[in-house]
Image 1 (cartoon, helix red, strand yellow):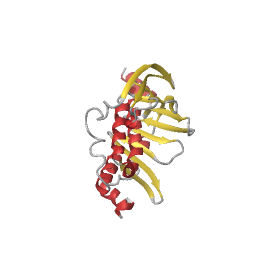
Image 2 (spheres, rainbow, N blue to C red):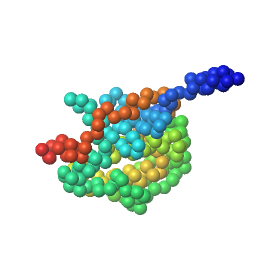
Image 3 (spheres, one colour):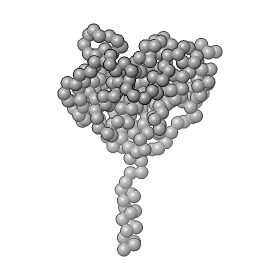
Image 4 (tube, rainbow, N blue to C red):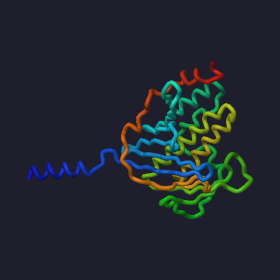
Length: 235
């Protein structure tokens, strides 16, 4: 009997994938690009455009941008990048990336639910959102937001990915950058986007075996002081 039990456990171990995960693929109709988001069985997330050596990692709730430089890899936590901008240029972000509770301009955004729609094999709630960027005129933006539990890490990574795209432009945008961060938080509070106005859509979701190395930082993240020193205006 003991041999039978050991054989059964061995069979179960072989049948269970050691690194099971999930891959969600989004497509951009305007740029003909794919955005690939991979979620490990531990909940870590990697996000990158297909064919791009740069990528983002969401590890233990912290989002890092990773890029290939001429002399090797560079990594930075986006919260540290925002802090470096605040210290080296002018205070812009404050606690926009970290404060608890709902997004601050949520009352300014007018959201209205418009039923449901299936996109990329997943059902989502259709929402119209007006007032983005403080603009009340024009047609509201339409989002299809999904509530599936397995896509929540995908939504968190997408939100942080958008924040990472906003932060470098802060010196030119001023306070508008922090406002965009807050608006992004308000929109993602509705769920994980699977369709953004028909321009950016979920194509498919699939289970996949993922190597743990894909979710490891290739280098130690830069400190705030190192980021400030690398800024052109700080030299």
